[in-house]
Image 1 (cartoon, one colour):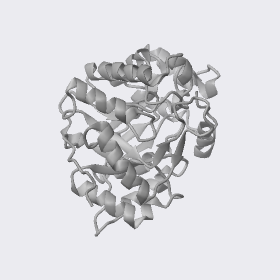
Image 2 (spheres, rainbow, N blue to C red):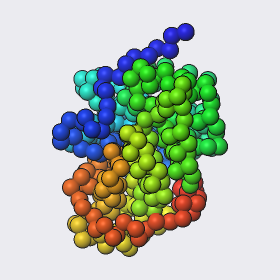
Image 3 (cartoon, rainbow, N blue to C red):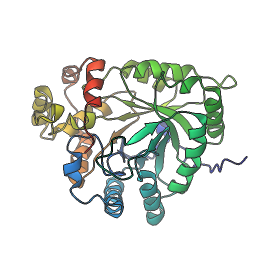
Length: 334
């Protein structure tokens, strides 16, 4: 049976990124659908949340990111129409063969464009979902993704022990796609180490990870360093903790953590820029994602590229991982 494989047009390795390309990428989780869990998301988008209005907003954000030099763009099947928006923009702007594109499989968007849906996405890491979503991704993007990740892999779903899934991903890897996983939850490090040990015919099919790391939740750092040392591409997501490390502040209360506020004031920037700069400062981080939904937020995020936060400040904000993930789970879709 043909799986519709199309070789990615951009072979990718962090070591071979063109000189001068920023290590910041744009993630589309907050742009491809009308609701998301980032603090202030609904207010940032405003009342214009139709498909066409969000398509226009996404294209404008992608144009701004490209103009700033960003070449890495991240989507997923569950990000509403993010893949469709990105694929249309790549084609219209003539960037299909030059952008580095990541996407993810394993969640299905089910909110039907409603912000008040009881359930926005459904997780399923079975081979059947992979076989269904891979051709959907090819169609939406108009090309194969450069990186293709299991979306929020955990030990609980058993995906890393699913022989059928691993074999299929190994096929994609053999064809030129950099296959990997994204991680979430307090056991990110355990999940990543299990993936590092995965083998198909004696070869690990994975070579990329997208993980949550931020000043509140740095617990996966050692495992991410191990993945980097093994030659994996390491991408940081949720560097501003879904808005908790921005002017929206902890738990949406409007109070930025004092240590972060002080460092931002010292550097003359917004807190999000400092948080992203802290991620960029990690020696194992190849790329860091901005999740900006407005031009102003992206401009603030881009300032991270030229910052050098005080090293001692980095250790002051960490929470117990279980506490952090409970707080994240309590965030509302807006």
